[in-house]
Amino acid sequence: MIENASEAVYRVIKDRRSIRSFIDKEIPDSLVQQILEAGWMAPSAGNRQPVEFIVVKDPAIKQRLSTQKFVIEAPIVIIVVVNLERTTSRYGERGETMYIYHDSGSAIQNILLMCKALNLGSCWIGAFNDEKISRFLELPENVLPMAIIPIGYPNQNPDPPRKIPLEKISHNEKYEEQKIKEYLMSLVD
Image (cartoon, rainbow, N blue to C red; front, side, top):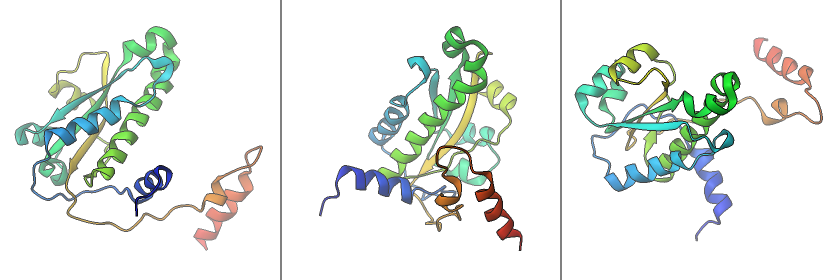
Protein backbone atom coordinates (compact mmCIF):
# COMPACT_ATOMS: atom_id res chain seq x y z
CA MET A 1 0.00 0.00 0.00
CA ILE A 2 1.35 3.42 -0.96
CA GLU A 3 1.52 5.93 1.87
CA ASN A 4 0.04 9.35 1.37
CA ALA A 5 2.49 12.24 1.18
CA SER A 6 2.11 13.43 4.77
CA GLU A 7 2.68 9.92 6.13
CA ALA A 8 5.75 9.49 3.93
CA VAL A 9 7.23 12.82 5.04
CA TYR A 10 6.47 12.05 8.69
CA ARG A 11 8.14 8.64 8.40
CA VAL A 12 11.32 10.15 6.88
CA ILE A 13 11.48 12.77 9.64
CA LYS A 14 10.80 10.23 12.39
CA ASP A 15 13.23 7.59 11.12
CA ARG A 16 16.18 9.86 10.30
CA ARG A 17 19.28 9.17 12.42
CA SER A 18 22.85 10.41 12.53
CA ILE A 19 24.82 7.70 10.75
CA ARG A 20 28.52 7.31 11.52
CA SER A 21 29.32 4.08 9.69
CA PHE A 22 28.98 3.53 5.96
CA ILE A 23 29.18 0.63 3.50
CA ASP A 24 31.96 0.97 0.92
CA LYS A 25 29.65 1.66 -2.02
CA GLU A 26 29.68 4.58 -4.45
CA ILE A 27 26.68 6.90 -4.57
CA PRO A 28 25.38 7.51 -8.12
CA ASP A 29 25.69 11.09 -9.36
CA SER A 30 21.92 11.18 -9.92
CA LEU A 31 21.35 10.72 -6.17
CA VAL A 32 23.99 13.32 -5.32
CA GLN A 33 22.13 15.72 -7.61
CA GLN A 34 18.83 15.04 -5.83
CA ILE A 35 20.49 15.69 -2.46
CA LEU A 36 21.94 18.99 -3.67
CA GLU A 37 18.59 20.03 -5.14
CA ALA A 38 16.91 19.36 -1.79
CA GLY A 39 19.38 21.70 -0.09
CA TRP A 40 19.05 24.27 -2.87
CA MET A 41 15.24 24.34 -2.51
CA ALA A 42 15.39 25.36 1.16
CA PRO A 43 13.93 28.76 2.07
CA SER A 44 16.17 31.71 2.85
CA ALA A 45 15.57 35.10 4.45
CA GLY A 46 14.40 37.51 1.77
CA ASN A 47 15.23 34.84 -0.83
CA ARG A 48 18.87 35.99 -0.63
CA GLN A 49 20.05 32.38 -1.14
CA PRO A 50 23.40 32.60 0.68
CA VAL A 51 23.85 28.81 0.94
CA GLU A 52 26.29 26.97 -1.34
CA PHE A 53 27.59 23.39 -1.41
CA ILE A 54 31.01 21.81 -1.91
CA VAL A 55 30.92 18.10 -2.79
CA VAL A 56 34.03 16.13 -1.88
CA LYS A 57 34.72 12.58 -3.07
CA ASP A 58 38.54 12.56 -3.05
CA PRO A 59 39.80 10.52 -0.05
CA ALA A 60 42.87 12.76 0.35
CA ILE A 61 40.68 15.85 0.64
CA LYS A 62 38.31 14.10 3.07
CA GLN A 63 41.31 13.26 5.28
CA ARG A 64 42.23 16.92 5.45
CA LEU A 65 38.66 17.89 6.36
CA SER A 66 38.41 15.67 9.41
CA THR A 67 40.23 13.14 11.53
CA GLN A 68 36.99 11.27 12.19
CA LYS A 69 37.07 7.87 10.49
CA PHE A 70 33.44 7.92 9.36
CA VAL A 71 33.96 11.24 7.54
CA ILE A 72 36.98 9.89 5.68
CA GLU A 73 35.21 6.63 4.80
CA ALA A 74 31.96 8.23 3.60
CA PRO A 75 31.61 8.01 -0.20
CA ILE A 76 30.82 11.72 -0.36
CA VAL A 77 31.04 14.66 1.99
CA ILE A 78 29.06 17.84 1.44
CA ILE A 79 30.37 21.02 3.02
CA VAL A 80 27.61 23.59 3.42
CA VAL A 81 28.87 27.17 3.24
CA VAL A 82 27.20 30.59 3.30
CA ASN A 83 28.07 33.69 1.34
CA LEU A 84 27.72 36.51 3.89
CA GLU A 85 27.44 39.29 1.30
CA ARG A 86 24.16 37.91 -0.03
CA THR A 87 22.55 38.24 3.38
CA THR A 88 24.34 41.21 4.94
CA SER A 89 23.80 43.37 1.85
CA ARG A 90 20.12 43.48 2.78
CA TYR A 91 20.01 42.62 6.49
CA GLY A 92 23.32 43.87 7.86
CA GLU A 93 24.39 42.46 11.22
CA ARG A 94 21.15 40.53 11.73
CA GLY A 95 21.86 38.64 8.51
CA GLU A 96 25.27 37.61 9.85
CA THR A 97 24.25 36.86 13.42
CA MET A 98 20.92 35.16 12.74
CA TYR A 99 19.73 34.58 9.17
CA ILE A 100 22.77 32.64 7.93
CA TYR A 101 22.04 30.07 10.64
CA HIS A 102 18.35 29.86 9.71
CA ASP A 103 19.15 29.58 6.01
CA SER A 104 21.93 27.02 6.31
CA GLY A 105 20.00 25.01 8.91
CA SER A 106 17.03 24.74 6.55
CA ALA A 107 19.28 23.57 3.71
CA ILE A 108 21.12 21.10 5.94
CA GLN A 109 17.88 19.59 7.24
CA ASN A 110 16.57 19.23 3.67
CA ILE A 111 19.80 17.40 2.77
CA LEU A 112 19.53 15.07 5.77
CA LEU A 113 15.90 14.26 5.02
CA MET A 114 16.54 13.66 1.32
CA CYS A 115 19.36 11.31 2.25
CA LYS A 116 16.99 9.32 4.44
CA ALA A 117 14.33 9.29 1.70
CA LEU A 118 16.97 7.86 -0.67
CA ASN A 119 17.96 5.19 1.89
CA LEU A 120 21.28 6.91 2.52
CA GLY A 121 22.79 7.78 5.87
CA SER A 122 24.17 11.17 6.85
CA CYS A 123 25.43 13.07 9.86
CA TRP A 124 25.37 16.83 10.52
CA ILE A 125 28.78 17.85 11.86
CA GLY A 126 29.01 21.37 13.22
CA ALA A 127 32.08 20.97 15.42
CA PHE A 128 35.12 21.63 13.24
CA ASN A 129 37.95 24.13 12.92
CA ASP A 130 36.36 26.89 10.80
CA GLU A 131 39.66 28.59 9.98
CA LYS A 132 41.37 25.36 8.93
CA ILE A 133 38.44 24.30 6.73
CA SER A 134 38.21 27.79 5.19
CA ARG A 135 41.92 27.81 4.40
CA PHE A 136 41.96 24.28 3.03
CA LEU A 137 38.91 24.80 0.80
CA GLU A 138 40.18 28.25 -0.26
CA LEU A 139 36.98 29.95 0.85
CA PRO A 140 36.90 33.71 0.27
CA GLU A 141 36.73 35.82 3.44
CA ASN A 142 32.99 36.41 2.97
CA VAL A 143 32.19 32.67 2.72
CA LEU A 144 31.84 30.67 5.94
CA PRO A 145 31.67 26.89 6.44
CA MET A 146 28.52 25.91 8.35
CA ALA A 147 28.46 22.10 8.30
CA ILE A 148 30.24 19.00 7.14
CA ILE A 149 27.85 16.22 6.07
CA PRO A 150 29.31 12.77 5.36
CA ILE A 151 26.88 10.70 3.27
CA GLY A 152 26.76 7.03 2.34
CA TYR A 153 24.84 3.79 2.49
CA PRO A 154 24.35 3.10 6.21
CA ASN A 155 26.26 0.32 7.92
CA GLN A 156 24.30 0.79 11.16
CA ASN A 157 20.76 1.33 12.37
CA PRO A 158 20.96 3.30 15.63
CA ASP A 159 18.12 3.41 18.12
CA PRO A 160 16.15 6.65 18.36
CA PRO A 161 17.75 9.21 20.66
CA ARG A 162 16.07 10.00 23.95
CA LYS A 163 13.90 13.08 23.55
CA ILE A 164 12.34 15.43 26.08
CA PRO A 165 8.59 14.72 25.91
CA LEU A 166 6.83 17.07 23.50
CA GLU A 167 4.29 18.15 26.11
CA LYS A 168 7.17 19.48 28.26
CA ILE A 169 8.58 21.71 25.52
CA SER A 170 5.42 22.87 23.77
CA HIS A 171 3.79 25.91 25.34
CA ASN A 172 0.40 27.58 24.98
CA GLU A 173 0.11 31.34 24.60
CA LYS A 174 3.25 32.03 26.70
CA TYR A 175 6.41 30.31 27.86
CA GLU A 176 5.73 27.95 30.77
CA GLU A 177 9.13 27.60 32.41
CA GLN A 178 7.94 25.50 35.35
CA LYS A 179 6.93 22.66 33.03
CA ILE A 180 10.44 22.04 31.76
CA LYS A 181 12.09 22.77 35.13
CA GLU A 182 9.99 20.06 36.81
CA TYR A 183 10.84 17.58 34.09
CA LEU A 184 14.57 18.31 34.22
CA MET A 185 14.57 18.05 38.02
CA SER A 186 12.90 14.63 37.76
CA LEU A 187 15.90 13.42 35.75
CA VAL A 188 18.28 14.33 38.58
CA ASP A 189 16.45 12.27 41.21
